[in-house]
Image (tube, rainbow, N blue to C red; front, side, top):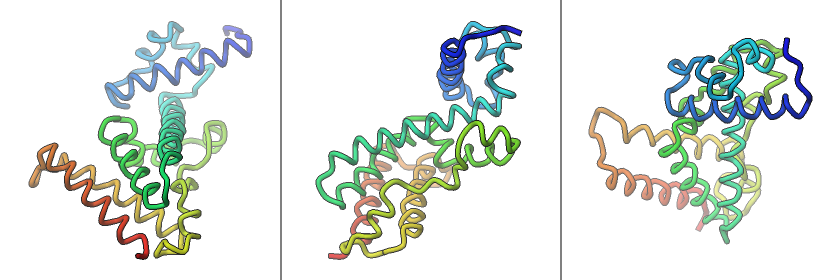
Length: 202
């Protein structure tokens, strides 16, 4: 068994997650092989198992890292908003763009792949990789729920309402009444305006 220093282990693990992200995004989970990842990183297959027990555990680590990246991106965008209304609009627009342009974001947010795979892992693997994705609350829901100008005071309701809206991204690929890109963007913008108008008390 190869012996690595702590810094080498951290570097290799980070590289496995980084290169795994690129391959999973390009080819999907099923078509990406462990061999593809190890060749990209420049390590042997046996060395891979010193860092991850399976392709599934690597994929979950990739999705966790992607979730953190998306949340940081949303945080940065929302921090520039000047009002609660603009915060909600910015959060939704940023999330929609991520889902449309990033295959991993779509699988993570719309497909729910992180939760599905998380449930399949052993308890030891779940503890080593990260928190249960079902425990994650949509950022800002509790703060918005506490505001007088917000119609609903239940953060879970706000969380569910805004998360449900993200699923309309699937309409773009629907075989029934497929929308042109420009039409879809208009529908998306109108939906965001409608939801925000309904969320806030005039």
